[in-house]
Length: 221
Ligand SMILES: [Zn+2]
Image (tube, rainbow, N blue to C red; front, side, top):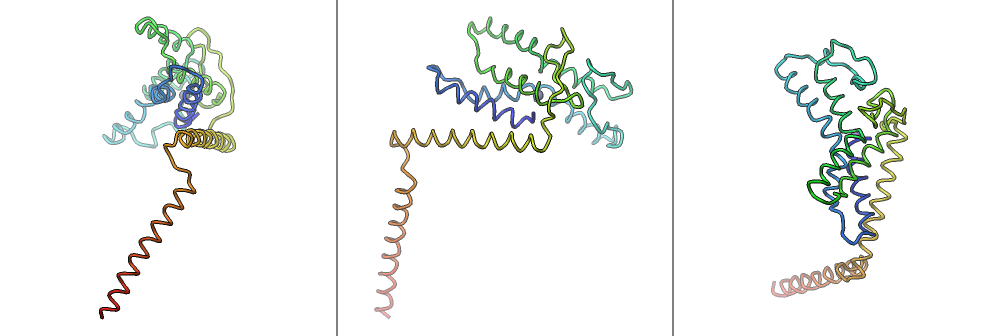
């Protein structure tokens, strides 16, 4: 899935979990973990491309049109630039459940507690398993033990993008709605109608004052 959706879903998941948790999750941190696997895998490739094209070491025509699939799954063309198989390796590292549980265990030992915000990373892998096809970075969920991967729906399929973003808009509207209702109950925000009425009262008062001064001036003249 695209990185923005990953971040938004991880944030939404943490915010939804917070409704039931006594000790709330840090939504920002969960969102960060939600985008981390793609940041880790895809940060070097654009920098490499930018620097090499700028230095004229590489021209656009030399770059592969489609990114080669994962190093572990398909035979990669040997004449490709090193950065492509390297990106595939980084992708395998950050999208493997085995690597995830290994890192989560190390964090658990160091912190002596489960960092639940790391679930954003787990959610990222699970979503990517279903939203990548064989053609574009199939998710190596059990790498390096198994090369099994699932031929999912490519996330960039137009109807899938539309459904995904419609669902995100719906979820975030629901959050805003419940947040506003809670604040209304707590008296921290005023109902929209009362704010509008107050605005109208202010406008009328201003008009009255302006009208009075104008009349006064006309009388003076
Ligand atoms: Zn990903």
